[in-house]
Amino acid sequence: MEAPSFSSFEFSSDRPLQEQLQSQLTQWICEGRLPPGTRLPSSRHLSTELGISRNTVTIVLEQLKSEGFLESVQGKGVYVSADLPRDISGPSAIRWDAKGALPELSDFGRDLNKTPLMEHGEILPFTPGIPDINSFPQKAWLQIQRTHQSRVSLLGYNGNQGYGPLRESLAEYLTLSRGVRCKADQIIITQGAQQAISLCAQLLLNEGDSVLVENPGYMGARKAFLARRAKLISCPMGEHGVDLTALQRRLNIASCHPKLMYITPTHQYPLGGILPASQRLKLLDWAAANNIWLIEDDYDSEFHYFHKPIAALQGMAEQTPVIYMGSFSKTLFPALRLGYLVVPEALVKVFVKAKSYMGGESPMLTQAVVADFISEGHFVRHLRRMRLLYQEKWLHLNHLLGTQLPQHVKPIAQSAGMHLAVEIPDVDDLALKQDFQKQGYGSSALSSYFNDKPTKTGLVLGFANTTKDQREEGISSLKGLLKRPY
Ligand SMILES: Cc1ncc(COP(=O)(O)O)c(C=O)c1O
Image (cartoon, rainbow, N blue to C red; front, side, top):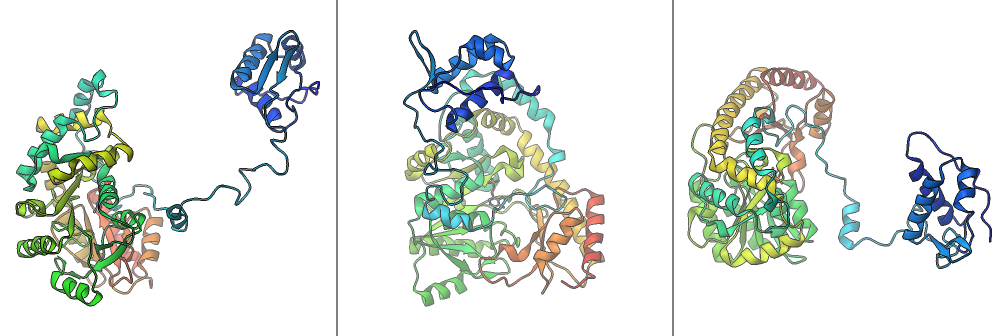
């Protein structure tokens, strides 16, 4: 069969001719306008017909031959490959753009498809979870980065557990500053605390297992447990965090045996409670006696403003059933995507194996920079500076709320962290958050942190990433908004 005329091919000046010719020829073949077995004109003829150089035509024909769309037949010319499917565009063929024609997702994929996409929106003043990025010591960071970026040994696949010197630096820091009992061998570097939580969910839970979660609590953890098709059980919360007595009562009534408990004992997320030492010890005892894993998320405990950071639960006793995790997202910056797990020695191998196919290595260059950033003292210096800076911001925000909005807003004020949860009783806090956002401020609705029916409404205000002016203008905007009914 002879090819039709190619005179309808169109070429524009904004893309290479070669690319345009190749895509139009491929399209004609896939659409069946050049069926298998069609003989193409010679390259000289095509070049004249299309008004482009013969060299360009030859390169494209050779490329399509190497991809299997065309074939040369000795002494006869170039043909559309005979073994291409004949009715590639026929009515019975799969149309990938046709609704419902795709192969099925997994059960998990289908469930997930029904939930809204949780994306980090634009970073605005008061967006929770964002450190003061402008105060990051870029110069020291870049200097260290320069010393590592030409190291060939950091360019390959090299260790799913994480960069050795980083694990050594971290082990020392966690032991001295967070009271964690660990050796470098027990640390696994992850892609943020979120991957650490997902690894725990994958390795510790079977479908249908019960998991205790704080309520309100961290949504990312809930999602990771639900992805394992676990059953979430809300922990009753007291002023300082989990209320163990009420929890035990609830479990007895439900005659339910949880497999795992996810907890933020040193700074409850998002309310800010600090679980007293007596309760933390009780919790450890209770978990050990009942064979329950405790997943301790120590996401921002470096920032306590009027006393030393509270020591981690993990280090309070020998042989605890605790898996400890932390993140550099708050102490350095979120885009690093570096977090860490401290697991009992017996579990290291299985965690490393699981990590090897859940993303593999964390970026080596970044790990090497963080390792030196810690060992050269920049990390501790940066934390000290941020602690003072955030303390000032925390005091200022509390002062503004107390003077500007005394009747409306009740800060759930623990002197810690990078955000402040404020209770604004009986409001549609989702609508309030949206209106606040329209005025240029990020925040989260307190009700959105609840696992079931919210018992508190209000806003979670991230203050670390605000300037003095933004705090003043933001609280004044909030005051204006709260004149409306919500
Ligand atoms: C309580 C809590 N845990 C874990 C994370 C996840 O941190 P990462 O950025 O390291 O994944 C966050 C993030 O905001 C958080 O608030």
